[in-house]
Image 1 (spheres, helix red, strand yellow):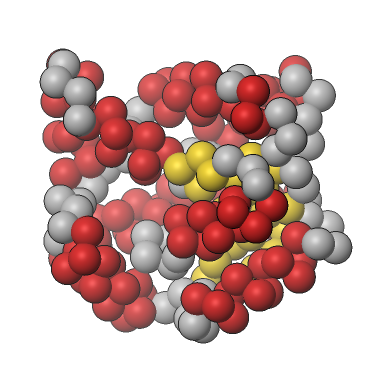
Image 2: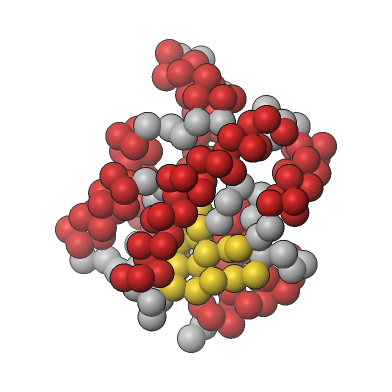
Amino acid sequence: MILIFFGPPGAGKGTQADLVSKKFGIPHLSTGEILRNKLLDNDSLSEKLKDVIDSGNLVPDDILNKIVANRIAISDCNKGFILDGYPRTIVQKDFLSDFLINNNLKISKIFDLKINQKKIIQRIKSRFNIEYRGDDNEEVIKTRIFKYFQETKPISDYYSLNYPQNYYLIDANQEIQMIHSDIIKITKK
């Protein structure tokens, strides 16, 4: 089972991917979490990542592609995995496509969480008060939302056009449990 979660920052991708991961016993591969863990290292790459993430810009494709490929190669992904925050760009989409083909893997379901912008800002501000993430201030939020619609939304649109039988638009304005229920029903199909 290979699942991909799309949606703007604050749509609940991480929350839903985490719940689905626990339900089906497959790893939740969050590029955001992997990168935040990398920031704990004290090296030149972690300093570059900090600058990129704090500015709201996306991490370069070559770094993310390497991280994702290395993570998928770990044995806990043999029965499936969930991608959250990847692919975000055409280069990443093409890399993932080639990687899956070369490893005889196929995407099972693609979930695109749709949410209005006012709700996004409200959720992220709330998350900031709980998690104190440096990338959750209002200016960075607006930059990340803009980047999402400029760079990542075309990727989810690509999947909706090219994989319509595997692509599902989810109303992320709902309560967490309702979103989760919708995703579980679809995943079990």
